[in-house]
Length: 426
Image (tube, rainbow, N blue to C red):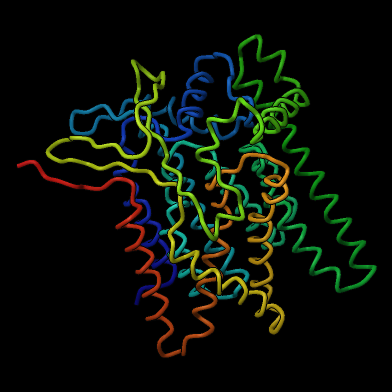
């Protein structure tokens, strides 16, 4: 008899195996790898930091991987540079799935729902893509999930420390803090005035520890990462670096002439559910060593070994997951109202924070991108599985849930998997 833990490791293994082609193809830069991998090389060289809009932790992780693997993996006699900068994302993606399993298990008090929810998340395209390429999103999602897991294990101080790491992994990574503080508020507010006092005490301590960890890490990593004299003047002072990050992001406005080239791929959050515009993650080639030069946008065809490969990174979700979310998310609200389910409450807050956080920014004119929806996807995956588990008769429950997961896998594999064989040369 296979245990639930063994099934979980099988899910993680399949997720890792599916990433093997992605580690090697394309052997060029995909999407924002152009920014972050170039910046990682600048960190290793001691050159100037041109990516002032993001804190350093994620770029340092990529730089360490490049330093260790030396951009020099040999596969079939071909030098595969991309392995060095994509390997950390795959590892952190696997760790995110493991943490998501633990979170669902602790909230729903059951390994079965946790396993099915984790399986479903592993086949979401947004999660898969950002667990594949050398960008920063999967790093902050890992530390966000770690902070939630530690909080649910009654280790609030360590949870706040992890939230501090999330803050220094990527700008706008405050989601985990808001989720935890909101969940604590809803649970304590029912106790009246005493509960409000307890919430204020908890929230102030949590924010204080997270902020302190963020500042200390920012100072330490800036000192290690940016050794150029000009950078020392600008970014060794954490307030200067924080100001630079805010200035960078506050300038991403739809009315700014400097950002008009981004409007073609922008997508406001109220369209993410109803009428999303999938992003074609552009592909760049390596000119010389690592200096990027834009090559194509959308689809790339490569002749490698004896095959033709179609390489197409699409920034969108696995459609059936989100379609069912139109029903399953309201069901979570019903489940909390009727049964006071803490799991339903928590994942409702998770989704609400990660999705509606962007609305006021979009209304204020800040440019939005579809992949900002990615942190909301785990909450939808849980909602889908919870909904099916609740409405389907017990004798058909497992079959229906596995059928839905298989539908999502087929959709992902057929329409969205980024590297596919299209022809064989005999």
